[in-house]
Image (cartoon, rainbow, N blue to C red):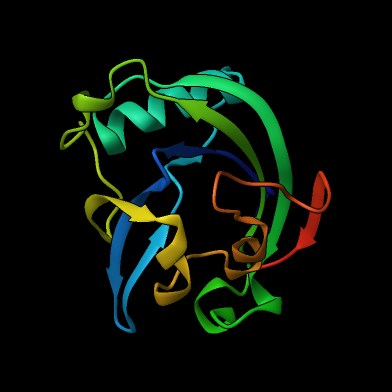
Length: 153
């Protein structure tokens, strides 16, 4: 049995746009929030700062914890590939000290093909994972219904 993986993600909104990692897999283009797995010995905040440098090439200021989400792979659409994957993900509201500093980063995820600002009023046109967070976006920001979203994708 594999251990539960802990991860942290950054929710960054600036001027009505969400900063997202653009990904591609066999099913096409999709978007996720920047961030990833926590390493042994680092806090969630330290891990998130490291992951953002790797994926978006710039520092982030980590703010409030917005929500916690679980992803138990066997319960969702990717169950064939994620059968033994279980992740506990903490999502923080973040800001960019240097919004113009976004770049290629030092280490991309395997499926990452870019970084993109997605207009909040156009999120419905894009495949954003987890889909369960889409209803919580407003014209100005993000307001989750709870601090714990459960096992969602």
